[in-house]
Image 1 (cartoon, protein in one colour):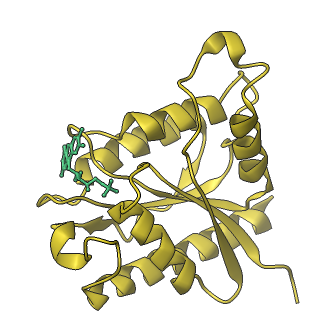
Image 2 (cartoon, protein in one colour):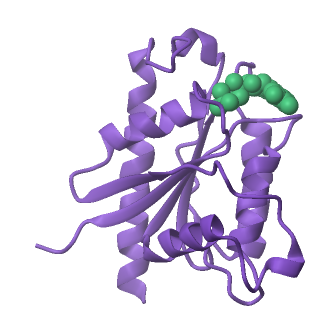
Length: 187
Ligand SMILES: Cc1cc2nc3c(=O)[nH]c(=O)nc-3n(C[C@H](O)[C@H](O)[C@H](O)COP(=O)(O)O)c2cc1C
């Protein structure tokens, strides 16, 4: 049997009871049998400083090593002021540098997100897709997982209230794994 597809997941929130971290924890439970999902916490990644990009801080080195070892990436993004949170953009900026040493290049990627609002991170996710172009990542198109009104779907401690959100997350993961296998075959 071939080795499982390795997915690295990270959330663009440092909040302890983050809905987006909760989405990733759900994804860990729902990952297809032929894949494994490891979560990486962005806590401790300092603000990007281009003077340091050739000798990045230890946490960034660890992040880039994990990205390189992964077959695919899963990003759970909150929406901050109609875009992606600085914490997430900052981590992506580190991971993409120094040019041309972009650890994210060529990686299949899927995204999902939860917000307390009515659009469930749709605007943030389209901004993230825009960055995937320059990052040379290969995003899956569907399903789009926009978890709206997150307070109704999760308890305050991040445990799940609404079982219905499991189905689109399972579909997202199945599609990511299928897409990753397709790209591997094409190499
Ligand atoms: C700085 C800031 C900006 C926000 N902007 C938006 C926004 O544009 N759209 C939205 O739906 N929610 C917005 N929110 C509310 C978030 O949806 C909410 O804080 C959510 O819990 C963040 O995700 P998390 O639980 O994973 O930390 C904002 C929250 C913060 C702190």
